[in-house]
Image 1: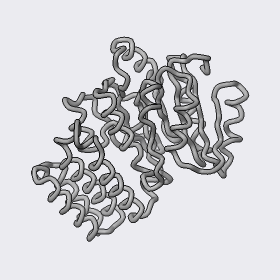
Image 2 (image 1 turned 180 degrees about the vertical axis):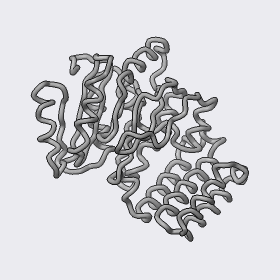
Image 3 (image 1 turned 180 degrees about the horizontal axis):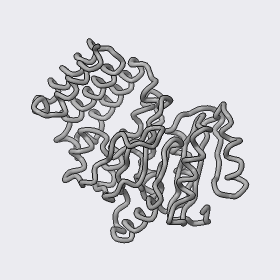
Amino acid sequence: MNNANPFFTVIIPTYNRAHLIKKTIDSVLAQSFHDFEIIVVDNKSTDNTVEVLQPYLASNSIKLFVQDRNYERARSRNKGFEEASGKFLTLLDSDDTFYTNCLEDAYQFHQANPALGFYHCSHEVVDEEGKVVTKGSLEPVDNPFKALAAGNYISNIGIFIEAGLARKVRVDETPVLIGMEDYDFLLRLLFEAKQVGFIPKINCAVLLHPQRTVLTQEMETIRNRVLFFVNKSVKSELFTREFKPYKKSFVSGNHLYLCGAAAIRKLPVEAFRHFINAGKSNIAGVFTYRYWRHFFVIIKYMF
């Protein structure tokens, strides 16, 4: 742990997660594979996060960088990329956890596939009592470009990126993109890497709790972010090259995302508008279960 030249660097951005970050760090320290370092980048927390981290600093278990203000996760992750000593970098939010064999399995995968600079495992979502809410798939996708264009099936937990590749791609720090920077990063990462490996194991957990940003933001903020992201992406070289055949699916999928976000906030008129726009964007998608599932989500939250 915190070796001079570790195989993995685990990058943990945090902001006001004093009540959660200990469990996150402990899940890394409990790994069956020990050749790693932990970098925590604190976005100038106003709670006692830094105090909670003191025992880890005293035992040289982590490296801590404190930003001069809250720049959100994008800049924190880039800061982690810059400071990392590991051959491969992996991201872990300060309210999520790795399971015991996460890094071991990732290392063994690399040994079997040394040419791959980007690979990932599966994850599950758990509630505050540790009960599984949703399980990730253990089935590999046939076409990662098609799958990722349709939605962020990879997420940013349990991904492993060769350090030079991560530094080349970087996370977009544009403020309006905050909340979609994960998806944007993965699209550009796959575009650069050309392929992604998959470890068919659920090796990490995302904690579902009331303070998660995705559950607390206003609809206007979410709408502006997603539409900016879509406009940025479709005008980039991503959708003139590898992702080009899946442009309609990408646009439609993001309208469905907005449809769901509006529905759970009890905004049925806006939800129906995005539902219709999703259909217009990709007529073929109208005949899928995913499309009509969003219709019933709207109905569910109307009453």
